[in-house]
Amino acid sequence: MKIELENVLPMDIEKRSFEIITQELGDRKLDPEQELIIKRCIHTSADFEYADSLCFSENVVRKAMEALKNGASIVTDTQMAKAGINKRALARYGGEVYCFVADEDVVQAAKANGTTRSTANIDKAAAMGKPLIFAIGNAPTALIRIYELVEEGKLKPELVIGVPVGFVNVVQSKELIMKTDVPYIVARGRKGGSNIAACICNALLYKIDNRRD
Image 1 (cartoon, rainbow, N blue to C red):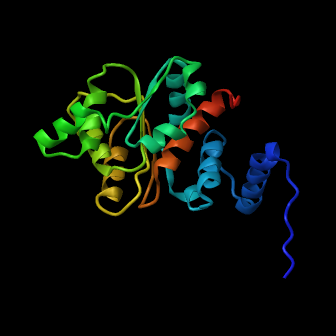
Image 2 (image 1 turned 30 degrees about the horizontal axis):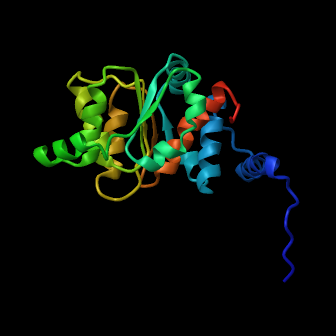
């Protein structure tokens, strides 16, 4: 069997990938505001189910972009998600990326309270008192804690990206976030991951400014 490779320059690989994604979506029409985010999730995962499973609260893309332009920072639940976010692009607007799960005070708080470190990570972030976007790709307990703090009036996120992957309380935690009045982008069902959380953050940043420095 002869294998034919496409002759694509390194700088054109992403562009060609998005062309293939668009072709395979066929006649399907995506909301123009959501299109780049959906296609970037497909690009990251090669999973076309994100065209159906991604759920967006009303005007969330516009609200998230405004929050980023006004200096909102991002809190993740894994170092992997933190590593995947374009920090230079975020820093142009004054934002930073935080992940506290390995901090000693978070580890001790989790032990003392009998919670996961992801839960304690959210508590530490909530105490910062600054505009925050939460990008959760791994821990449903983080989403549950965000929901609890929102319901108690102790936290008002600029955006919740709820895309944890897995089986235990994953579906339920996403549905809880969708019951709140906070802006959200949620991948309904079991699929997601730290890579998806990071790519949604980057898609929002690239919608503002497509420079990749």
